[in-house]
Image (cartoon, rainbow, N blue to C red):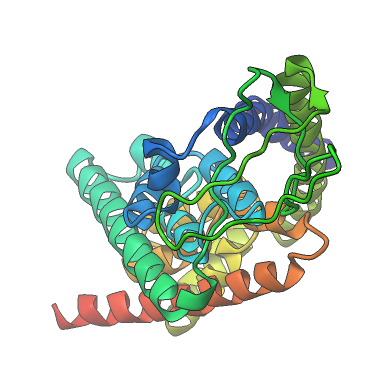
Length: 323
């Protein structure tokens, strides 16, 4: 019934909201409390794609949201962003873990294989993208905390902090990993605004958008019928990677659930499921689209994920046939 779609959308959004809020609080802590030490080097250093891919394997979409936000503020590279997105599986791994359609050993094999392959693909692509786009690799180090112990006021979404004392403060580039800029400003936000109000407003904005998306795609799946989607995937064996990759781009947990459930009952091949899960970045792309100047980056990321997912799907399916 149509009212079940509304209830499901509200439930999914309500479950996601606490994670969104905590992620934005964590981002604020990183941006205001992290100096140019180990955490900063981890985000901008040589291990960033591996760390991003490892975080992406955690079965929750909050890390893709966090990565998208950090990328919009130029704190991580495009390669690290793609590493997180490729490794992200949303709720698919949890569905495989709890489904009665698979035997216990099959569950373990499927989960380890999917998570492992996506982890390796994530950091491999991350390093390759950073190597190709080397001249765009430079990221903005996280700001130094104010010496006065106050919370610096910052302009979000990629704008540098400015001093208001009348002195010009040019950005210094030293060409090494210890680069940093001073985020201190004479006008300071209160800690409540920074660590509570700002994350809450951001989380509410994203949650409202998520609710609209959940309603839209919920009605779409309701109109088409989940059984028809599964039947179509079963019939179109050679089209599966193309269709599954497209389904994976849907910023809704229903996409990863459908892919995992259809794979569990034998409706799609392992490679086809991998194709969809490679493109599935949770709400990450949606967060990128919130930036007015980021639509080109979001379009590039979405297109890259789709084409890469299709390639992975056909490759894995071909290997299965050979073996």
